[in-house]
Amino acid sequence: MYVATLLTSPSKPTLQASLVESLRNAWGGGVGEWLNPEIAAEFPLETWPDNLWQVWDELQAMGIDLAVQEARGRRKHMLLADMDSTMIEQECIDELADIAGIGAHVAAITARAMNGELNFEDALRARVALLKGLDAGVIEQVIASRISFTPGGDALIATMKAHGAYAALVSGGFTAFTAHVAQTLGFDEHRANTLELDGNALAGRVAEPILGRDAKVAALHEITAQLGLAKTDVIAVGDGANDLGMLKAAGAGVALHAKPVVAAECDLRINHGDLTALLYLQGYRVDDFVTDR
Image 1 (spheres, one colour):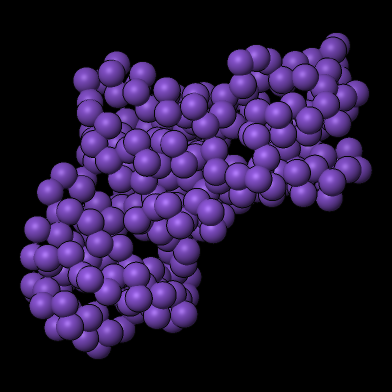
Image 2: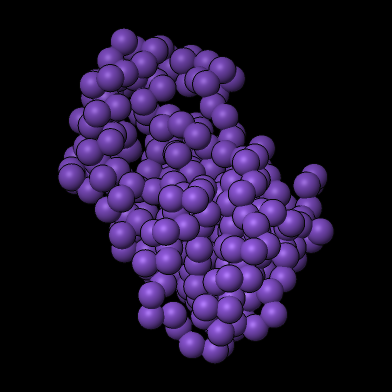
């Protein structure tokens, strides 16, 4: 058995009952249910739709995301999340570089690395080297004035944890930022790279070994082993090429507003919804959401 989920942006709901019913009829699905009126709905399927991606393309033009997955086991016991452009709306290294006056140059390297055009580890070393001499105090400045959380992240983590799940933040960014994000949103643990300092300034180096694509996959295996979980118990979310390994290894890998090269390799693609989409994909209804910790 499978389940089809349709959802849209909570801030601009465009999902109509007639559309849900039309697709359900076309695919011979079971009874449809609203997870959140005008925002998310689902219905069961006995067979995988042959024209899934054709329909997906058509719905994208309407501002609607569509996902089909196996119904069994879709509610997960662990969340593994990327940070930059996933749990937060920025790339932290780009914000640091902007303060240093080299924002456009570093952002261009970041974009190429996230698109898989550059080796992540080499690109990170090169970008950090350009920050040499920057006052370390700018890290707190960026956290205080430039970091915004992706909508739905607090509800995602609080709801999953309320149902017994474990939440881990695994980032190719820096511990100075993951510590703040993890504490604010309620992650159980965080892993990231460490910026080395020379006195009160950035040394232009990142501590080795660098946490990149392979390290994110390793984190998935290490944490699930510690918790006695299988990788099928994990829902992972990310947007960049360095996330692809963990997205493919997890039971459910969600490409959230992801780079095209990443989305192309993932069956669960969210381009219009926010982080609460991960709850709807697991079958949670809006009444199940926990909005405060």
